[in-house]
Length: 276
Image (tube, rainbow, N blue to C red; front, side, top):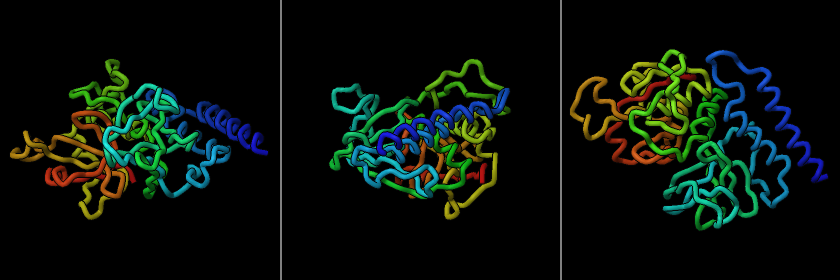
């Protein structure tokens, strides 16, 4: 019976991705099989086919909770395979989070730099964290963003498109600054066109108060070099709000999910809702 479940899971993944590709949009629309689709298929396959003692850690992609892996220490390696001998693809600091796909042989399976990766499931190093999900489109945007975790911050990186859906032929995969990442995630995840800089993205959507922040909202901040400027010139950073005081963004080092520090809150300017 267990073998039948595993085959069924694999068949589901193959059929799902084939059907998604067949129904994909044409032209400059988001790619036909999104990273969110792939991650959801992986989660579902591992959930119904799990045979490695994962128990009820996993949950189907239809759950109202987003299941993540949270690091309990600084410098936790994200590895290319299930074992400490595999290459490190990057590290997580205490409180940083990545996607949870499955528990396999004492390792959390995740997505890092758009590839399958693993984090030690030793309870001294990492554990499971859950937060509330939002609507499907917002979750698709966030799933794309989570697939980019670990990519290095590249100031002034090329945008995926020019703010109108016309693709930028100079775009380089894996290179993002803060507004390039939000533009890419919203376009690939939900077909939403964000402009090319923080100071133009902040003019899009509907302004929402700090008390009304919801998962998927864009949060805009100033920084030390722009703090004393006025108007949109003050805006120096953008992030995607996830809930529970966490954001997904890239700033100075690499794309990461982390808590909003008190210092960053002191730089907060406003939030915009571009997708309900």
